[in-house]
Length: 170
Figure 1 (cartoon, rainbow, N blue to C red):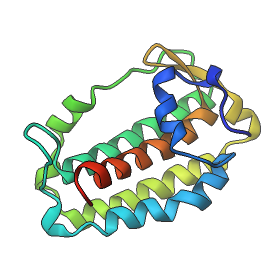
Figure 2 (cartoon, rainbow, N blue to C red; figure 1 turned 135 degrees about the horizontal axis):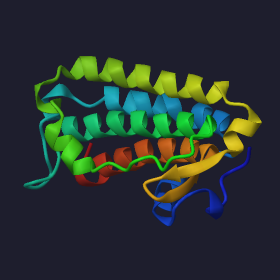
Figure 3 (cartoon, rainbow, N blue to C red; figure 1 turned 45 degrees about the vertical axis):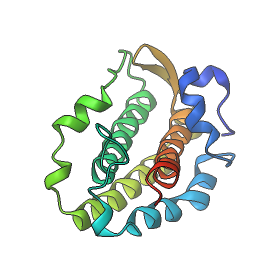
Figure 4 (cartoon, rainbow, N blue to C red; figure 1 turned 180 degrees about the horizontal axis):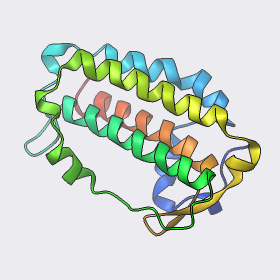
């Protein structure tokens, strides 16, 4: 499959897709997977509770958000690949962050979890056929393809690494 066209995702997903330069999911894995994992692993433990401004997430909370979001997006990809007919629900990232237990979690365990979630997502996408990748469904009242979700997943992770660099100076 090639890069997703504008008919495969909602306009707000373009930001995430723009963070990627690969032409298909397997190229994204080659280009970004190790870099994403290594970037989170390189964050010093003494900085994980830092927030760049009041009422902003700590690095640890942001990391939990990245993990949660990848799981949700992978579930959407699986559901759409299996031709789910219902509109998949959206989620409120701030409510999820507020209810998550990130501030009490072990940082090293979160890093292991992230690596496993990334591996799981990659294995899921490698199991999809070309027909699966073409499937379109609805999520949060927006049309979405499995193909686009692969790019959105990587782009979302890269977006948060960019925020870490820009705002958290990591």
